[in-house]
Image 1 (cartoon, rainbow, N blue to C red):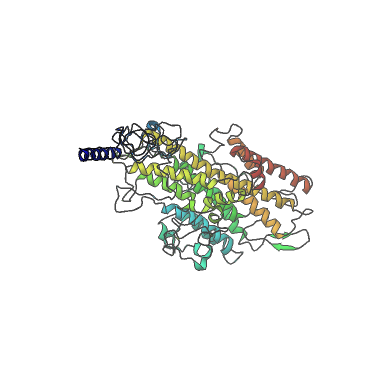
Image 2 (image 1 turned 60 degrees about the vertical axis):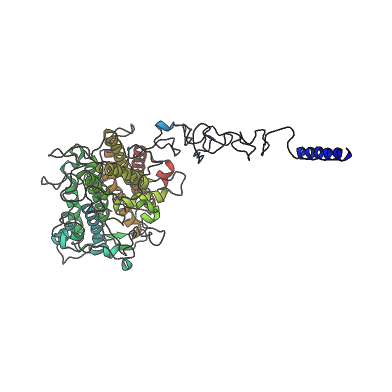
Length: 602
């Protein structure tokens, strides 16, 4: 009996012990202690998560889109709402379905090429480089060889007049006229040597690509058929005179710009052939000989011709010929210009017309990579500081794409001149950025399966072109003001009826001549504020008045102007002319809305 009792007690104790090793209350296992048993807890090891509504593997408490699968939890605008369920993914307060860049904050919705996607997600090119898939044999649809040749003719003519033309009675007036007219009329030009190799900055260390003769760049080139109004014989850019009118020079009756060019060339040739130098007696009584480009009235014909040709040829051709083409029109066969091949070339008529306009502006194709001081060939990085850069690293400078000519340099120069002021300008970008956007529109259209410009694209194209032309003109007007300011300083240095020295006389001649050339140039654009009524304070009569106030020669230290003695004292004549120049400056400031600080300090 006792043994049986002990045996039963042992069994009971064993059962009790074993029962103590289990969960006597039958509570389900909850590993993370979040109150949800493991069998029901999707995240049994995470006390912060218990459910995953969208079954994307991310718990509802951490899921920025609880009801939408979004494993990556992307949240571009970091607003706590995941992109998959955020109706404004980029946080720019524009709904995704109407946002032209739904993943990029772009509240302004800028779409420079009018192709749908905004610039924030479809950036504009920064280099003037485009192709056309219709012509796979070429990797570029850009070409403006004739315009490069025109730029070079003007630049070379300027160098010739300043450095190679001399006072020499053994060479006839006719021969000197012929030598200068070569650059305008291009007689036998294709085999004639270019001159730029002699004057390009750092010439000894520069190899130019295919530019030994003008024909290397473009054949049969000239300026007389490109100048506004044409060559006087019914050829060339006849429609270049707006309203059929040319004004601003009163000394000689000239109906056309080409007439004025020929008139100045004739006078220059006579000055360089008469054996009588322009003698300047300064306030100390010292006599000096002025440069052969300068006449007794204080006009520098090299400066006059250079600045005027840049306006009457380049600016006129760009703004009043190539940029005003009907890019969405059709040729005689009914083919859209944007689709019609230009001869046998790897570009269309529309593309080429716009490229030609850009070529007349004269910037390097990667102009945005230059600082203003580099583009104006003043200073900067060694490889850029001379106004050119070997972009394609072929150890040569290609004048067709890697060099700054003409007005593009002037734009950079004016920007550099305002950079330290309180209202710095950015004329270079005002021209270059819409230029790139406009060309992108044309490239987009040309590369469509069925090339065409939509109405929206055409409207945007015209907007860009207007901005290009306006920005370009601002550079010219600002340069006119720059020369007014320098002329005012030089005139103030007159000393008792005489220039203080020969440099003073020559400075007056240079600044006045540049001013006159730039001033005359302002009549050649149809988008000018003097013509388009955009600025109510001015109209074309104000430009005519400004040119009259400038006169056909500066007032000299003795008070004379254009050979006519002062009616009163020299000081009175100088004071009066100073007032006229200040009035011209005010007219230009009003027309182009230049700031006071820049107007006074350029």
